[in-house]
Length: 321
Image 1 (cartoon, rainbow, N blue to C red):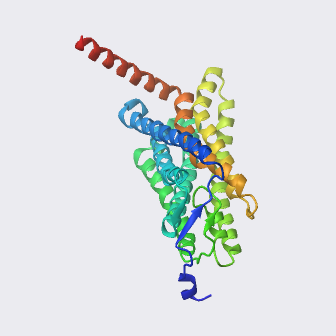
Image 2 (cartoon, helix red, strand yellow):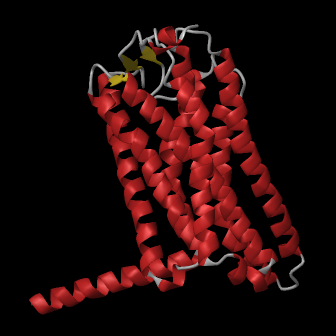
Image 3 (cartoon, rainbow, N blue to C red):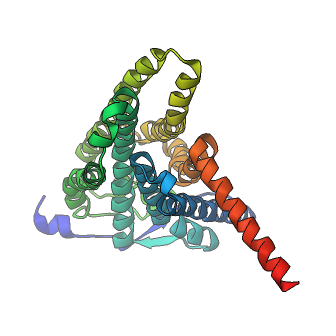
C-alpha cells in the first residue's frame, strides 16, 4: 500500500454507539456517571491535597499515591467529559483527530498507571523487607526518578503504535463503544488490521503481565517476610500498609487483562464495554476511597482535618452571634 493511500482518510468523524438505550435511560446514565466523575475529581483532589499539606504523609509511599491520584484525574478526564456530552446529544459524533487523541492519551495514561502500581509494590517491598535501609534506598531523588521513568516508559511504548494508528485510512463511521478505544477503532479501518491487533495484544501483554509479575514477586517476598515476624500485632500492622495497594491492583489488573490481553476481541465488544466502564470510570473513583478507608494514617489525617474544619466552622458561627 502506498504512502498516499495510507494518508487518505475517507471518514472525517466517527459516531459513538455508546449505550443503545432509551433517551430517559441515557439521562439517568448521565446523572449517575456525572456524579461518579465529580466524586472521582473530589476524592483524588482531597488525597493529593492532604498528602502535600500534611507532614505526616510526606513519605515515599504517599508521594507515589499522590501521583496515582493525579493519573486517575487525568485518565478519567480524557474519557468522561466526552462520554457525558454524548449522552445528552442525539448525534454522538467525534472527529477523527479528537478520537485518535483520546485513544493515545487513554492508553498512555493507563500504561503509566500500571507501571506506577509496580513501582508502588517495589516501595512496599523495600519498606517491609529492608526497613533499616528504606530511607536510604527510597530517597527523594530516587522517588522522583522512578515516577519520571513511569512516564518515559509509557511514552516510548506508545511511540510506534501512535505513528501507525495516525496513518490508517478509515471507512467505517460507527464505533461500538462509549469512547475511542483501540478495538472499535481498528474495526473502522479500511485495511487489514490483523497485524495491528497482534501488535496491540503483544504490547498490552508486555505492559500488563510484566508489571503484574513484578508486583506478584514483590508481594510474595513481602508476605514471606511478614509471616516471619514473631509479633501478631506487628504482622497485622505490616500487612495493613499493603492492603490498600493489593485491593487497587486486583481491581485494576482484573478488568484490564480481561479487555486487553486477548489476541482476538472482535466478538466481545459488549463485554469489553462493561469491563472498560469499570476500568475507566469506577476504578479511578474507588482508588481514593480504598486508600482513605483502609489506611490508618490517611484516616487519621482526614479525621484531624475534619475536626479542624468543624472547629473553625463553630468558631465563625460563635463570633457571628
